[in-house]
Amino acid sequence: MRLDALIFDVDGTLADTEEAHRTAFNLAFEQLGTGWKWSRTDYRRLLSTTGGKERIARHIASLDLTDGERAELVARIPHMHAAKTRFYSAVVRDGAVPLRPGIARLLDEAATTGCRLAIASTTTAVNIDALLHATLGTRALDLFGVIACGDQVAAKKPAPDIYLLALQHLGVRADHAIAFEDSANGLRAATAAGLWTVVTPTLRTEAHNPDDAGLVLPQLGDPQAPLVGEPGGRLRECAWLSFAELSSLREEALS
Ligand code: XBP
Ligand code: MG
Image 1 (cartoon, rainbow, N blue to C red):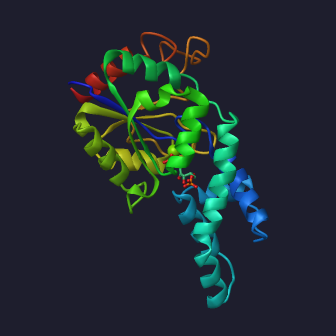
Image 2: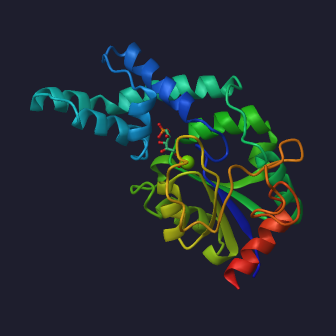
């Protein structure tokens, strides 16, 4: 079956960004004097809510407040999130967060074959632009023909909406594309959109149940960062997921 597009999640998939997000949230809370500070444990729990604004709203809902206090904080969420995005995008623009192993290689291999590339992410366009320019430079805009993200859809992951929007903008059928994700919410969103999905968990999402995934790998691997136990585990040709093997694994899975 033809393969017309690869659609990538951003946070946790293109790059392991969530520690930088957590730091940015805490810098914003400190700047705005909320007195909040999310620990790694807090944030791992809060990550089950996709969307930074939604995550702040969930935190507010957990606090013991009067109705007036709660309403005042809820009204400040957009301002808090804008401050967080300024902190986050500045850190990423400075190059603090690299792409995960194998991402740049697979993007180039896919683009060389004429396979189109897209993004389907819950984060904001500002954050995505900062990451792509810091890691891929000006060629990023040539590589990704479609970037579906943030508030372009009302229902965020695990709803399929952001993937359906990416497919619509690509003009590609779901069964002619592959999704790449890191989390349970992301896998549910991609699967619900009809996409065969490769899951590469991070430390924060390794406990998520990837049963519906087409393929689960610790990361995509590279000649310089070969996957332990490969070839011979889930891969047959080499110790990293090549575009050629990705295509044949999907072909077999769907035939
Ligand atoms: C992960 C998310 C985002 C980020 C924070 O997005 O859920 O909310 O955690 O970014 P992805 P924002 O779909 O790329 O995994 O604060 O901009 O939402
Ligand atoms: Mg993700």
